Length: 434
Image 1 (cartoon, one colour):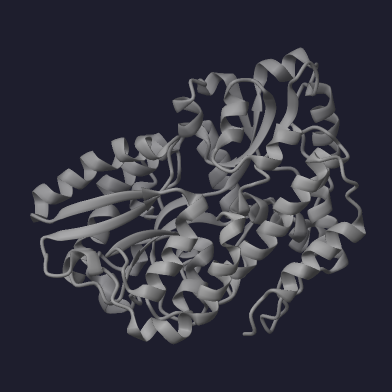
Image 2 (tube, helix red, strand yellow; image 1 turned 180 degrees about the horizontal axis):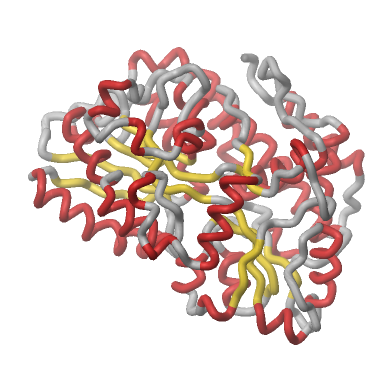
């Protein structure tokens, strides 16, 4: 989400619970029961790449059902704002992808179709899905607001050739090791690590993980935000220091917001990358799987325990239906199609993600070395982002605070505990009342 749209997004979120009852989701398909509109998130190397992947599958659905799907692939930088605007105005699609971290926030608006037992029965039942993916589809104790579509986790990707040239025998397991390796790799215009400081989602995902490792919770047990605790400050500063203090990431990374770090890694400009299931994107950038290794994201210590033993958020993409769609039956048919075993295998193998449908996971396509690492991380050391109604505001406000700090670091300004705390305090003060 662009920072210039922050005030608009925050105002929309604050107003959503008022406007949701007046929503008319799926307005673009009104009067056209043989048409659906679908907003897909950018999963591939580009918007055009996603169209190339999805359009043949959508034609299969049309052939099976007679329902034509109008596809729009929306970049992550715009997706949340677009959803919020559609929810407030009622001029939205019939079906849309949402980041699973937004589920509770969008659920609280009342604008999305609740997936009760009857709705799940129309797509084969809730028990087809991995339980953890259902748990990330809405607030506890409520019917999910969406259905899992792609499952993801973060891993550390490293360039084997650059590691060998730098005399690095194995991927780092702690952050101290990563920084030390990064310094060995940073030379002659190349850097040890690629980050995306202008990407609000990446900022949140990485600082959340570092926060867990430092003992930070960005919301207390009652759902009240606590963004500027000493633990949260330490986590955010550690992330910013990759540019500010450690200098293992390029200053220009502070502006990256649209998969540019993937390009830097694939072209050898950076030796390491933390990303969600990057395999398909790296392939599209011309990088062979033989060129890189995949390992879990590091921890603070070699033997973490308890809540600090987290090195990924539970990542994934969910599929939601606007409650007031004019073509509910068609929308449910489309969700059934997209979560069928056949489509789960095709789409997840293409995007390098893991299918949340258990019966699709046995396919050999999901037994690759990188997906084995991701599967292990998801099952042992991943934690969900806060399942609270204000989660999307947290992503926007704290993500922007981190972006501002990266920009300051790239400009050579000192990054101290005080400067980090000031940005996080400002973000907390901007949170609307519960």
